[in-house]
Length: 363
Ligand code: SF4
Image 1 (tube, rainbow, N blue to C red):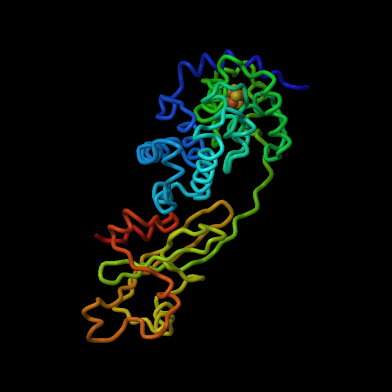
Image 2: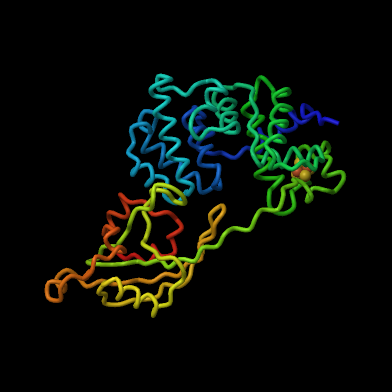
């Protein structure tokens, strides 16, 4: 039997009025701020997003500024947030809004969904919070909360299950406070009906209406099929220094971390001896190799298991006496540029996958 979610509305809104966190994008929920915050929040915790959000809107205060921002600057603003396609899509969408919507976000759920990077969840969030349009915003958090409330064992990874829940909510959305209703569900999912560990049912404003609570099956819901294990890739990462500058190179335009800067690396985990042999074969003279230890970075489908080495090339004045550090055409070094710490700080964004080794970079 279909669960009647309309019974939840008053309890959720009253709870939200008392418990809503003060967040920068909530204080002035103009469409641009709601949009940027929702895109940032897709893969990142609220606490981490606050800092990024403030910096982003200070640097790019409106859609026009976003549309005109250079890609390198956008990537720099996004550095550390990961999933860089999100900021590339923000840029594409901003350009479309400038040309097709006179610089204003369309106050229309369907038009919002046609913009790059905006799916039904984000369109619902922008439409309801910024424009008071009664559309639902269903993401993994909302699915978890409402499937528990309904005591439903539906597989929440199925698109059909999400669409049906959106339709059920669309029928009962409170016309006077659609944005607050959506946010109350998101907030309950973040603070009370939490994703990891036991939900805090004793603090839940809809406990008396929750089937999972009454049947003590909270921990069995939501149902998701087992994820395939991530592919493991072994990598050797090199922090190559010359004259207080560090080698970085651009990744290919397709695939993982597409088009982003990286510390040069090699497939497989090399030992110091293997790396020495490799560099010699490449014709690269070096002063020293220092191990930087192992590190791991988890992407959505892949894990990088890395080992890092600091490689010191001879300084320029030394090179004048000894010849070129790169005696052969080395594909490793010819693909790199050398950037100072200042340039790394201001111009080039390095994905957080390299964070463990980037920390070795000295002023
Ligand atoms: S009672 Fe517990 S399981 Fe049910 S919605 Fe509230 S927190 Fe979630």
